[in-house]
Length: 131
Length: 311
Image (tube, rainbow over the protein chains, first blue to last red):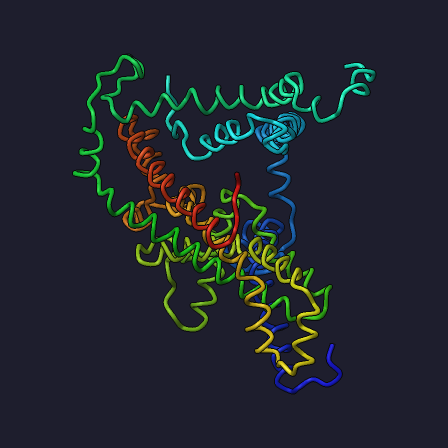
């Protein structure tokens, strides 16, 4: 930190803080807006009265979602998926990366495996399911 | 493996012994088996691009037609326009996204308050964590010409509302702008890390020599992050044909097909919707082939200009 600061520098810093803050708020705004919509009454949100604070606060939409059995099924599937995929994929990935971390004179076939993995990153069977 | 044997031999010979090699292969086996099942066997599907594919006869029973599918694609389906859309949207995303991330990181780097930097950094990073399915719902809502907040703001200035997602001229720019809104926070964090890694003694020395802020920026900061900027942009080259399927798929509508359709969407429409498996595979194969060339080129460039190699 300098002992004395030129006025241009101070001016620049003020603009910098303001600009960064505006951009950050712009990034946050759509998310806050939708959050506010979700807590507003259906009438107020349809009329377009809501910006960043809920109008006619209500948790009707949350009650409606929670009353749907499909929501809980989907939620359960998501949780189950994470609970299964996370440990399994971590195990496979860690097991595969340990040999690949070894230099070539320690693990001779390293390059072969690297290419084997690389090819799958470049070419795939495509979006279309085959036989 | 007995501890006695390890003790009697030199550790180096044990590591390079056949048994040591076998252990490495065994560790790789699960990943390789999964890869063969899910990546290599499905690659046989690429054959469909050269066949008049009939699902009843299967991949190996359908008649072989050579390059017919490709000539049909290039003569009829306006694939040139789709290719143009893809490259235009993707290159705008790469270029402007890069500039936005670097500029924002530089602005954040000048600020002294760590707390302020941390908070704003988190705020711009936030949209990155949401999927396009959710974000497109949000965007359709706020960009709506009748009830969206953005258009309410425009109307309050006395200008007619703009149908952002239904205007074929505007649509590609909306895609670019919203993609940057979602992802620039991630880039900012990468570049900010590179900026903090610059040796502070360089700035001290420059100040002692009487350099002002813009001189410090030009001679220390910019050269300091140039390698990582080159690396990131060169690696992005491989994505020139990936204009973002998730985003386009969720935001597109019939009004803007002409300017908004990208290669991945064509594959989806041909293959899944119209069940023209052979044509869809041909489009996918063209895309893979061009991407392959681009990726190899970009790695070569990254190696030469940024000293980055993966092998």
